[in-house]
Amino acid sequence: MKHSGVIAIAALAVLALSAQAPLAGNAWAQQMTNNCDPSDHLDNTTIPMARQKFEAAGYSQIQGYRKGCDNYWHAHAMKDGVAVNVVLSPDGNVMTEGD
Image (tube, rainbow, N blue to C red; front, side):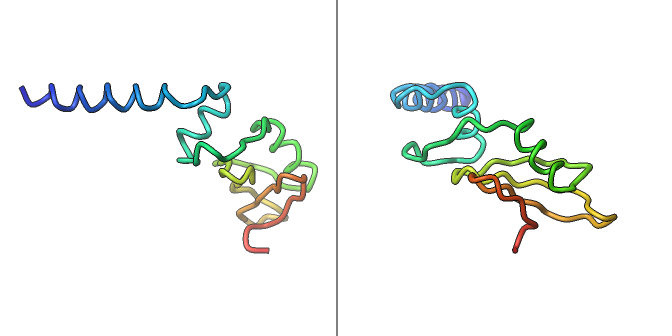
């Protein structure tokens, strides 16, 4: 059977991942989606926290949230009728991407 090799590889991958130090829910999800290094420290900020900061800075229609391994939040938003890419730094600064 061709599928037995795929199943064996998947099982080995699960075992390898479970051998690492356990990560709490949000940190695990972020590591899996962002391919973070196990030594990266992911803070506990959430999408609602990032949304609040973006909205307080005058952005609306915020979507496509993505948290990097460096704890910077990235998203797409509108400000003054213009679509922009925004970023929220770990220390709370909101800026357009590339500033």
